[in-house]
Image 1 (tube, rainbow, N blue to C red):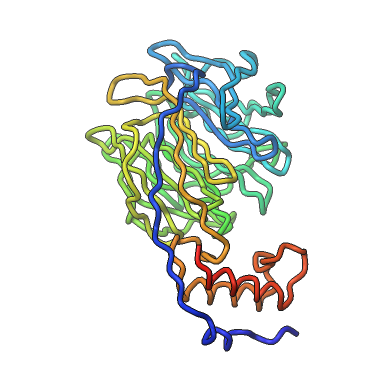
Image 2: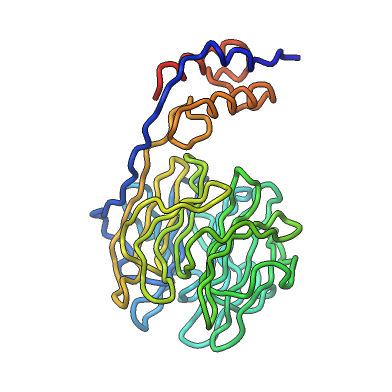
Length: 364
């Protein structure tokens, strides 16, 4: 058994790391054009963001685009019928983007489609009732896509929870968690091993509550975030946080960017003034955003958002190098966590600990 190394803390010199600003930047990247109520997710298997559909005025779209970090490419105009407000998530276990529902100029939809990078395949016509604006995320631990809420056109709001395993939908909860709502967002938080849901609205208000779905039940977490709907929300793996941007707060479109650290929401900065856009985040923490509404104006711009990635000694990922980082590393080392493999040689030994100590003393 490895001997605990906490006693070595006394020999470590203090080091500090100043927080560095993140930034939103407009990109010169012609792409899908003016859109709102569009859908977008990051395909980690092919390292591209997948963008589908949306609306421009009364026109609905069914085209599929991909963003490779530098440029947009139109892939197909076949597959799901044109719609806005569809829910999408990337199933990393099977390497496909899952799309459910959405809104046409007439009825709401309840069909399920999958994109494999080459073509769309219709997978199901049964499952959750037709709806638009539902939240959806993929849980890689249980290998299911989770769907919550939404609304049927000129009808009811939903508070049910469903799961898609690639073959069939199963209803898992029928209203014991968040209140019924639409235009809500949900992402999978790797640090909590759970789907995290925030915001949304109904006929009377926008919500500021944050909930967690662990595959069994919903747990209320916080009301520290913005009361918002039609916002974008992604998990930033590189910084171990959830990033939320824009949306509609009941009075106006907002330009605020927030972050969730697993316990509370904090305002990070301001950016483009938008709601109802598509947004995705790659594995390096680079966020891309396209389209949306600036008040009542439909936009066609693509934006990027990025923050400096913390250096390795910043083990907590809070952009501050202090004793908490050292304690976090010690715990990971004593627990034989692969994240403590500082040398990257696949084994955990004293050289890894010395590697971390040296990096900590040198600072970031």
